[in-house]
Length: 293
Image 1 (tube, rainbow, N blue to C red):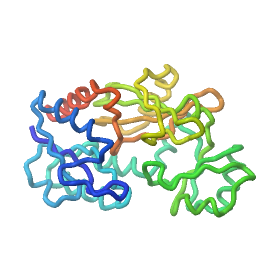
Image 2: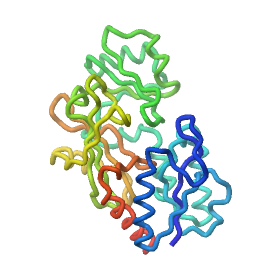
Image 3: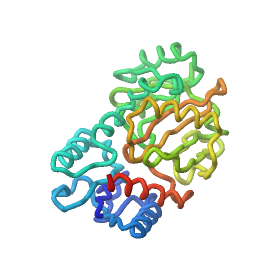
Image 4: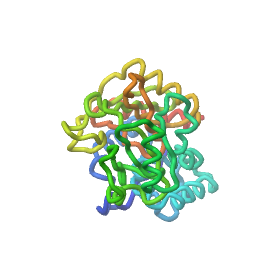
């Protein structure tokens, strides 16, 4: 079986060579390709916007390191849809990508999702109202469509100005309470492949930092999730699209002691296979099951 492993042409301003992936993903690519070879799957790493992918005889296309898609989200979805129209299955599907690309999906996930205020623009009025609505001493302001903490800002009540918003979202924004446990407990990422739980990673920022997804500034630990975190994640999985090839669910411990889902990543998640290499086999097994239907 031949599978297109969809990657990108650039990542954070750096050109990715043909057949390449961002440096952070090189180990994961090696593990996935090796697991595929053991199971009779030949992965071909291609940039998602290369012309003619749907004509090359692939059995499927799997979205992996398309880490520039948020710069052209509509073109990305349209490209995936064109693959599907041509008979090339895409995992996860274009419909799932469209659902997951705008973080308004959090509104569908029930009480396990973090409380969020939605704003068409992150201006001074919206920020002031959000502080009151959330009864928060600190808030985090993010784009509704974004990745990698780009244009994400943290603000303290009575200690911010409009100048702070220059680094924030340029368009529609989401505003959430800042959860202090991120600095100590960190953030948990839980992974399912083909509906089967695979592994979990605990991400702990360096002392004094608060972003838990920055290589070089974050400790990553393969660690079983607390049962309550697993329960919260399963609760939102029930409210999410079903039959996903892969999904990552990120959680943080709330100030009230309850786990809150802060993101579902069903487009191009970093899988942390460097820290859980056995999961590469679980991932490819899920692909094998899908292709065998």
